[in-house]
Amino acid sequence: MKLAIFSVGALGLGAWAVFDGAIAFPQRGREAAQFAQLQYLQAIRDAGAFSRASVDDPRQVLSDLRERQNELLRNLDAAQAAGRNVESRRLAVELKRLDWLDALSKIGQVDAAHTQISDPLEKIALLERDWSERKSPKTLSAYDIPLQWAIAGAAGVALAWMVTLVALTARKAYTFDPTTNTLTLPDGSTISPSDIAEFDKRKWHKFFVTIRLKDNRRVQLDLFRYASLESWALAMERHVEGDAPAAPAVADEDQSKAPSLESAS
Image (cartoon, rainbow, N blue to C red; front, side, top):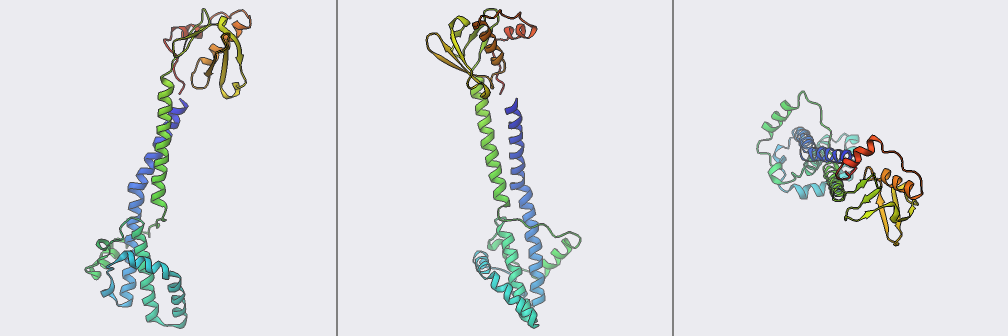
């Protein structure tokens, strides 16, 4: 049952990450790129340079602008401080172009198909109308979308591991005869109190007990994954120690009717 709960949690987390990585974050990234394009075209308009609105080789331009970003910022501050308005507007265009291309890069759209603007005046009018009553979107980080896919992958691996563990555990079944205190193992062999030399409980705190048989064979029981195995082992131990067997309770009678032990997983 614990693994079932964890599996549902892993499935939910993975589905959420896939939704964010495939739908929500790309949509937010497209909106951020659209808003960055609006700011870029507004800077182009202020500089009177609509003829340079399109970017023919956006990958190369983006790489160059990233290398020069600090230099452009310093030059812009200096130009504004000196009142060189023409130079300030030109530098502002370069920085806004960087913002736009960077936003496109985060959604995998840094290509000429997305950076050609055939009619800048029409495009800026359309964008200004669309964003007139909308708040500026939150920009994506470079790792936002890849992180969602990493989370989805990790959740998928965890889910696969838990399903495999449940399947492997379910292949084993134990049965118990409360009248003779005989335990039948998954391989079909049986253990009765007369076969037992010792109960090794050194791993009891880890939900394991090892039964040493009189023929020196050892059988380790997983008390965590098999629901009734602990109570059955304790019943056998009491009988081995010579205690009088307890009168069968209703729960014991119910267990004896069960054809096999259900996996707790």
